[in-house]
Length: 86
Image (cartoon, one colour):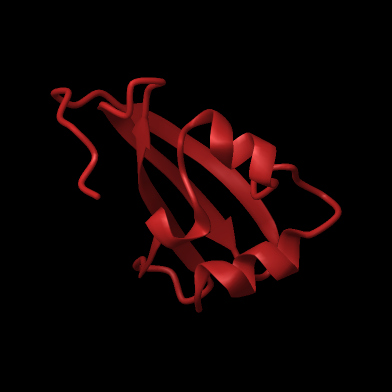
């Protein structure tokens, strides 16, 4: 399962992967990692989020259920600020 598979599955029901939405967090699809969980149809999506000065400001974490084809927010992790690697 890739982030592109998930984007296609939730198309039309979520604005999460819209360019403008991702741009607000200075994110791209390539920033997201998809991990398996202990459930056979649930995946964890994680990506660093950045503030306007491109300092890392947290971690976006969502869960995707492949049975329901829905995204579920988890929470936003606060981290120490550090510059985005180029």
